[in-house]
Length: 291
Image (tube, rainbow, N blue to C red; front, top):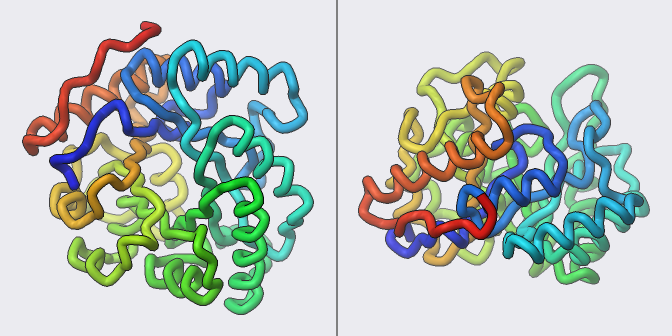
């Protein structure tokens, strides 16, 4: 699929630029040439959101205006945690708002191995996931499952097993290449995943040596590398993914933590374009409507 990639179709993950107001993210994405963004509507950790959107009509209006002005669409919203504390009623406003903002996908994740966390059984988690898919379907949303070694949906096999057991048409696996690599998977493992069960791919890179388990979350949230700067066999993986699959750039780079939102977005765009051009695939980043 690497030869079919068009940069303006790629989405910029909010994690790439840090926790920033949605409107600032949208304008930065436009300034860097990205065509889409992912928005954080619900917290995936014990920490509250820094920039609340749900229940903020003024913020929602600003997001819609920024999206219209820049042409940058909302691809996905996150994050929906599958845990014993999950309240489907609390999810519903986020699903409704995601669809209202134009999103087509949401991300669901397992419970993090941290503190005094409690966990669902496999059967309970599958049932909860199925109910989330049913709720999301009412808003035309596809539910992606992101696996992580520091949560109780750890590998692509765990995620796919739950997806198949739930049996919902609007469900798929989120292929975050960092988590795929840290779980010990190899590119040819992708051939075991039905193409229709891959919702989208999140691209980044990392060093070869894995951090200890207790530091995996910190790496994922703040210490990734730009594409082609690490050990992940990205070209082989991209060559095995379905043509036309949505790509998301998720590269929170530690050395860029002090950059502005726009600087981080532009750095992600430059490194992504350099990687794709080095592999004879991507066109140059188009001129952005808002610098």
